[in-house]
Amino acid sequence: MRLENVTKVYPGNVKAVNGIDLEIADAEFLVLVGPSGCGKSTTLRMVAGLEEITDGRILIDDRVVNDVPPKDRDIAMVFQNYALYPHMTVSKNMAFALKLRRFSRQEIDSRVQRAAKMLGITAYLQRKPKTLSGGQRQRVALGRAIVRDPACFLFDEPLSNLDAKLRVETRAELKRLHRELRTTTIYVTHDQEEALTLGDRVVVMSDGLIQQVDTPLNVYNHPVNRFVAGFVGNPPMNFLEGKLVHDDGQVVFQGGGISLVIDGDQGAAAAEGAGKEVVLGIRPDGLLHRPSDHANGEDRATQVVIQVVVQVVEPLGSTMDLYCTTTTGERLIARVKSAAIEEESTITLSADPDQLHLFEPGEYGVNITRR
Image (cartoon, rainbow, N blue to C red):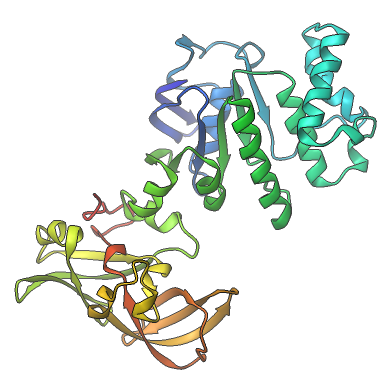
């Protein structure tokens, strides 16, 4: 599937999607993620044919489908609210689209039974949706899509109505199903954790534009700009405004009451920005309570220390989140190994040099240290 300069403008010249280009490979699981109003659901609805395209082209198997009605695009869509017919049994809900296409009764029964077994809902086939839990209804909605054997699945925030435990379980089920079916899938969510765990690639959107398309690990470890860095990751990345200066042959970030040496790969890129205002970014798990916590078992982090006051401690089992302030009142979140740390105490954190990012100023400031 290809999207070429796809644009959607609503009355009043409101640009929901602003000329995006995207290519989805056969059998790929692609996730569109971003805050509310970023254009991800509008993009999905244009692919489905439920929203008219203002400009650009959408191609499925090299066929332009701009003017092709939804029923002829060979896609199946799963919605947030399940959209099940309350007066029909589970079996009839799953079979409905096949009956409209005049499949034989034998073929319909075979497909429904196969999908029900795959989803573990065989026991519910003669029940009606109102007797099912939210998770069971979502499986029925998935089954209704699976029986159609489409060229592409479209998911519009399908897990948002489920509780936290069920979301995790259903997420794992979706990964298993995709591995088994190998059907091209486009999945929309505002939950960046879902995006990182499900997608072969992740598309981060904001203001109707694609900010970054990459593998989950690259989006997390090498964000292209400050928006992506701040949106992807939980807790979010810490940001400190400051300046790059040369000091005794090294490039040093100064700001927020701290002074950090930028070396390695980041240092080479930072040297070009010496003398400029920048924003330092570091993820909470890049702040270490003990140098020995460094992922490589090294003590490189000892050269980069930050003194902070711990305001709030949130125990998470083997780790804990520390909400801290620097000497100048800047706020930092550190995710460290669990230890006896008291609130209102003053501690020293070490920063993992490999996890430092430098961004140009502004909400969409470019990551100047991105490899």
